[in-house]
Amino acid sequence: MPRGLSEFELIDSLRSRAGVSARLLEGIGDDAAVTAPDGFTVTSVDAVVDGIHFHRKWSGPESIAVKAVATALSDIAAMGARPGEVYVALGLPPDADRAWVERLAASIVSVTEGAGAVLAGGDTVASQTLFLAVTVVGHVERTEDLVLRSGALPGHLVAVTGSLGGAAAGHRLLEHPERREPIGEEVRQALIARQLEPRARLTESRILAASGTSSMIDVSDGLAADLGHIATASGVRLNIRAELLPVATGAAEVAAAGSGTGEDMALAGGEDYELALTIDPTTFEAARTELRAAGCELTSIGSVAEGEGVVITRGGKPIDPPAGHDHLS
Image (cartoon, rainbow, N blue to C red; front, side, top):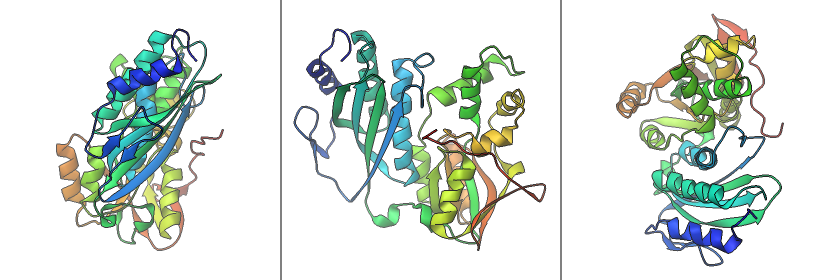
């Protein structure tokens, strides 16, 4: 365990900070949490590990907490569910001191509650490598409220929220601080923030779920790879036009420094945590207007057809996207 802090002191610290909810009957402090869910539960687990998903040389405890919780919440968003309870298994290395761990604990609670959820439990363990394994339980009133990967229909549009490639560009900037791409400092910091502190599209997902969205997935492994999951689950072909991709501001310039393109980062960079989806074309404009009012753009990038796989074209000619983000490499 970290210097100057015992396991039970850490648990007491988390318990004193954790909030309450009507569903949570018993939270941190007993052997297990007790909840009284209404409707149906949606559960997802995500782990982040130092040196793979984040680097302590770049990230303070607040940023690590944001990334760990947001990436797990993003899976709940992709299902159209509301977040309810969060559980965190925390592996702490011996060089983490008490003040640092207290900041991490406070940030975990803050990010969780900021998403409308409550920290309900977890585990702590000594580890040679810092890691956080986050379980999020979401809720929907009816199974019809869920948005699955398997619902894409021929004739629907393919769309994506926000912009793509920003997280990959931010990672490139952190890896190569000596480079000076032709982007302003404000753009540079915005790209770095996309990598260090992603956000889950929770509000946007519920708007989309109520607006004729037939399938949805969060963009964690790169757009091309994640759309492939929808195509496989739905038994359809997704036709994507690369020139329509909403590439993050500055990503093309960062990519060019490494002999790549902004489209490459958008298609394969990963960790953007935007929502890729298929949607009824008759409801697309209404959904886009409502999302825009919530501060988020929705861009149509292609269409669903009969067939299989993902076909990406540029200027009408098929292209092969670079390999996507792989969590095991």
